Length: 266
Image 1 (cartoon, rainbow, N blue to C red):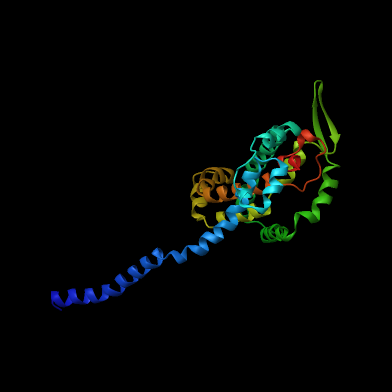
Image 2 (cartoon, rainbow, N blue to C red):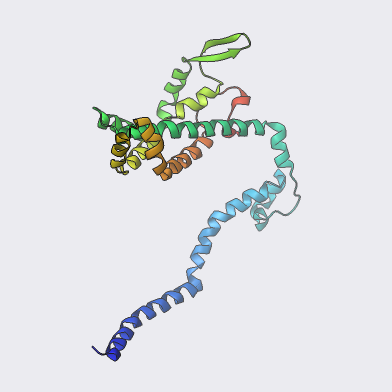
């Protein structure tokens, strides 16, 4: 085939591509394609604008502005009294401190415990491994509301170590303590399943090579496999942090100084 024939064939083949590109560019320039997107975005933006603008208004003005566009705009008698009043009425700083301590502790301890459990289920071979993994996955279908009351009864009868100036002593019940807010939520079935699946995708030849060099299972978990599981650690941390920070249904704190932010603000 001559050079001119090849150039003509290439030109014919390139024409549909050019038309496709031009058609795509025409669609992007059509303003009618943006109207549904703008209307849809307003359904999400307007409630946020109303919340923000109302936070600077007194209660009477909020009710008066509900029938006009002024409800979504910070106009009128604006002040910071609502924000100042929150800190005057309740110890918001203490609530945030408790939530931070509890949530960070659950995330950090959960990453260690759940990743080690997932490592054992994915890399070790022992009898009953499949049954244990199946039981862990089965707990995902059980809502927290069904076993919240039995958990309250359980933690109310567990011993707790209390430090004194002259030593330490044991007391019954975990109510009004950090233990009851942290320990029951460290182990997470979804995180264990996530780590199990991720560790299973890592080649097991790495374990064999490390075992030949004299490394034990703990060293393999810490220095060989876990550095390769960064995405699983990040995903587990995010999916653990969000529900724990927003946790509300756990009725074991009567002391106001020990309440997390969601319960305290309520």
